[in-house]
Length: 258
Image 1: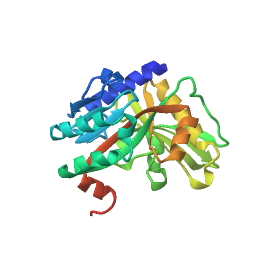
Image 2: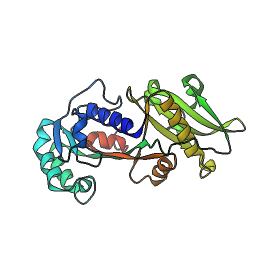
Image 3: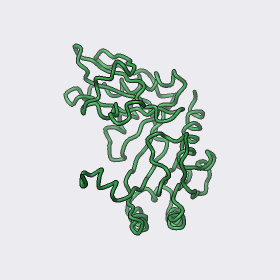
C-alpha cells in the first residue's frame, strides 16, 4: 500500500462511521449529516452519534441526531475548521448541547503510517510476534492499552518485548473494522525511554500491513508521550474527532455513578 491508498481507506472507514461519502472529507465545504448505524462502522462505536465532528484538515463532517442538525450546522459555519475543535470556541458548542443533556466527551487525534517513514526499529530486548493464544494471559491492568478485556474477540495480534523471559512492553492490534486495526502500546515504567515503544509499534504496524490491513493509532491531544511515540514509529497525524455523549455516560466514565 502507498500513502494515497491508506488515506483513502481511512476516509472510507470514517464515511461508514459518519454516514456520509468518502469524498465529503475532501471537500472545501463543511457537511452535516444525520448519523445512522452501519454494519461496517468501527465495532466499538455506539451509533448513531448524537454529535460527532470529524476533520481530515480540509473541512468538518458533522454526524448528528436530527434534533441537533441546526445547532451544529450553525457552530461549524461560525468558526474556522481548526478552531471548532478547541476552546474557547468549543464552549459555544457545549452550551448548545446542554438542553439535550449532552456534553463533549472524547477529543482525539488519529495517526496513519507514512510509508516513506515507517521502518523496523530496534531495542535492546527480545521481541516476539504473538497470536491470541499466546497473549491471552496478559489481560491485566499493566497491559490495558495494548489489550482490551471487554473486547477480547477483537484483539488479533501483538508484539511483545521480553527481558529474561519477562514481558516488559506490549503492542496490541484490535480489529476495530475489516480494513483497519488499531494499535495500543504499554511499556512497564522502569523500562521506558529505551526505544521499546517505537520498536514494538513499528514492528506491529508492518505486521498488520503485511496482512493487507491498515494500522491506525489514536491518542488524546494532551498525551504528548503517546503522540511522540506515534511520530517516532513512522506515523503521521491524519484526522481529528470530537464526540459528545450523554451526561450520564460521562459521569459513569468518571466513576461518579455506581
